[in-house]
Length: 346
Image 1: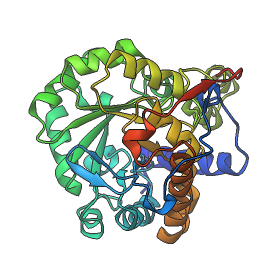
Image 2: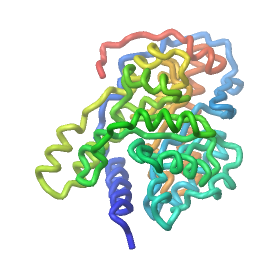
Image 3: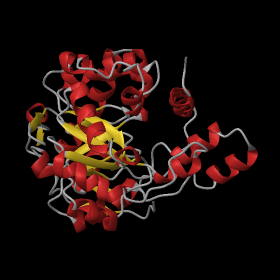
């Protein structure tokens, strides 16, 4: 029998897939910047190196398949397609929330099978921050990592979404202390991410101070979970409350720029409305180590691993062309490429 939590996860998938067919565009902030074009690159395009090393793993391209789904019956096939594609491309992958798998009798494909089909990738487990509170927090974290043979654990922060869900977790007292406890005891690096409203520099410093290894700024520009919850609302009043927050948050580029300035040594992931390889290149230039995509590849993940591979190959080639047209032989050079400000505003 489908639980309320599983039903909610299926609702989320349906709404996001429908939104991809009729997208509502939010500003991710990257249009404020433009690379200075280099008309004399003196490079071989095919020799440009877009590999990177993150959390002890070498990736052939700086992409993360961001957390998508972990509690719906479709998750098994979706995650298998994503893992197969990540292995073929040599990129990283984070699974969706493992709460349903940990609390229920069904794992929804979140097992070591993912590691079996993708033995060489940087694979990340995932839990909601609210699930870390209490005596079970450390146990949940360890089980989530062990369940899939993960190299890191992602803890996602979604206070806005929880506040707008009738069934949401509304008491967030003690979450930072719980994150600190997991950071101290977890055997793999701890990554903390927002889910689409952005990390501020102030919160980023708090997380760095308690031992978090990596941050995902996950700003506005992509999926608005407030809007998703508005679509789920059964009463007009609930919908009105949720939709008022549809554009709430910090644009991804702004969050990335601020957090990188505050914590220049902290490895960062940029996600939230990454539209193509040009946005990805800009994110890397502004301080990201990895670039994440989720909703943009969800339809492909429902189709096949080949569709996911084709999606990312296109974006990786776009990144290579940016490197070529900025005279950057590798990502280290891209991070020094000249930028121009435009008149656009986030």
